[in-house]
Image 1 (cartoon, rainbow, N blue to C red):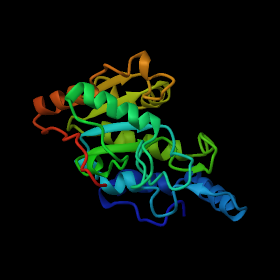
Image 2: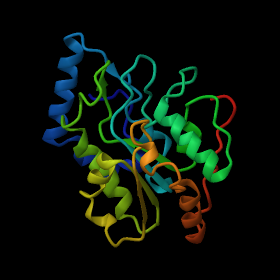
Image 3: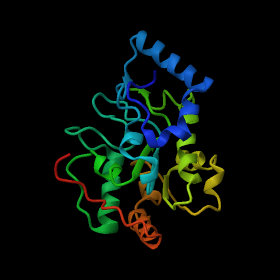
Length: 232
């Protein structure tokens, strides 16, 4: 098993066949072998499908696509860009907060726990759902993309409009593999990654948060309250 948590019910029709595929079985075997060899894998079992558990398919209003989990101890918990309570806010997330403040006047949160967004229908999805401790990108191209592409395709196949926020080349190339996004009912917004290396190239000033809410409102899907509670 790649994760001790069961697949959330609303995702099962689209994803259960993928999880039973040879590629995902091979990934599960590889992860077990890595852990048996003493490799520390983040996030821990039981949290790797947290993005799907907190945001059912029929609740998805916004998709924010990351690359892989944070590789530091105690950081990752299954939501892209999010860290566990008590962990310092990573620099990329700090830049997201800076843009939120500029765009919507929301003061930067004191923590980096984004579960409140996920519970409102913001799918915080990484393209790889695990990483080896201290090794960014170490579980890319090991099979997770088969599952996460299927997640994106399931959202894109719905007639209910959603917003896809694609920050950076990796997210944009991943979305390009999903044909249903092209010409569909969804709003696709692109910008550079919020990393300190690229945020000044166009992430700052992209106004994706207000633009996402404007689109959702015109589609009768309400808006996201991007404010985060003072305590995670």
